[in-house]
Amino acid sequence: MLKRILPSGVAVVESFGDPPEAVLYPEEALLVRNAVEKRRKEFTTVRYCARRALGQLGLPPGPVLPDRWGAPCWPATVVGSLTHCEGYRAAALAYGTDVTMLGIDAEPHAPLPRGTLEAVASPAERMGVRSAPAGTHWDRLLFSAKESVYKAWYPHTGQRLEFEDAEIGFEPAAGTFRARLLVRPEGSGPRSLPSVLRGRWLVRDGLVVTVVAVTPGRQHR
Ligand SMILES: CC(C)(COP(=O)(O)OP(=O)(O)OC[C@H]1O[C@@H](n2cnc3c(N)ncnc32)[C@H](O)[C@@H]1OP(=O)(O)O)[C@@H](O)C(=O)NCCC(=O)NCCS
Image (cartoon, rainbow, N blue to C red; front, side, top):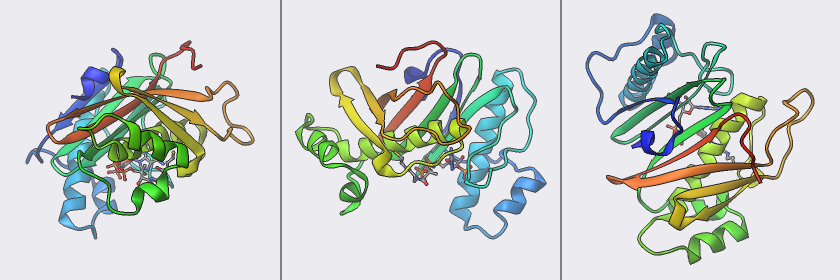
């Protein structure tokens, strides 16, 4: 499903189960040695997806280790993002020459737990959720869009975002959204960062998926 909403040049591998051939490198296994089975399975399968995506880019497999804030580390020429939720795991990777920022997120297509929307959304975002066409859990979509923004932003800037740092507006008919960044990178962060990130979304088979993929030279107004 992700392939439909990502630009060409992005290698996407999805899994709707946990294949037995998915295995970890010793240094990866160490990181989840005390984790519950559910966590070990999502961690393992999503890395299996990532290695297959690396293969699609013509790159050899290798361990996918997290940085100090959990972001997956890739070969220097590559950008990428991982996601997992109940019944779904996915990896999306691209060469940095094709895509400069990349974030993906998947969630169950169900309402957010009570109180979550109030915790993550601005008044304007909540109004957008309330007035959007019926049939879609816009609160969950909003949450997923923010996660995709975060996953695209952090590896590029080295800065984490709070939920109030990006304001999301949906274009329901187009299946797109705009994320207005309300912060700028500090210190030595990249200088020419867009202040608006554009994203796409899809609801299918009980899942919500969102992506943010910035391609070089694209305008963000
Ligand atoms: C890190 C976070 C974004 C992960 O999203 P999630 O919906 O909980 O979980 P997902 O399964 O979709 O994604 C998990 C994967 O995200 C990736 N990830 C974790 N931290 C990351 C980071 N700082 N940057 C990029 N990717 C990250 C990892 O690959 C992780 O999988 P792994 O631990 O198996 O390697 C989320 O837990 C979080 O901390 N959110 C708070 C910050 C935020 O979203 N702010 C909103 C700003 S507008």
